[in-house]
Image (cartoon, rainbow, N blue to C red):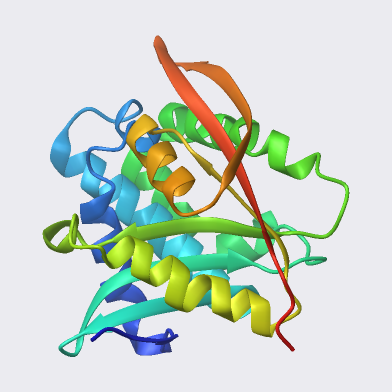
Length: 210
């Protein structure tokens, strides 16, 4: 039986490592850094920065199985500002440039910004799923669906409800979100590092349960 709760500060580094391992084969990162060791360090730096900044300004939820973290979800709440460069820098953004190199990091930042534009054009206040992962050695066990249905969606419902949006660059992931009740509202092609990257944007309306 999985347990769900908010992340603890002392778990941030471990969660970043879990995320980096899960994202190693994800083109959202791998097209920018080819060497596997450097790629892991690049993703780890990104996730450490994102989780450290998110811990202070956003919502980070974890799924626990037998006292081990097996899933992580980072949520941006409605009507909150995007994380500023200053807050990200203080949370360790310099690590990203050191791990990935200036050119690759800037390309990744530009792609990341472009990938979120469809969601940002939604006029009403919305939740945004910044990242959602299942530990690599626990994938295909139903943990992702359980985390969404029993943790992320109930959390949003208890905190006002509203639209939940997200972006994925994986066709397999897009099918996963469709199975979990999300509606695709935009698909586009992003071209970076000589790669045609699919970009799926999804939305799900979550009623207020309060």
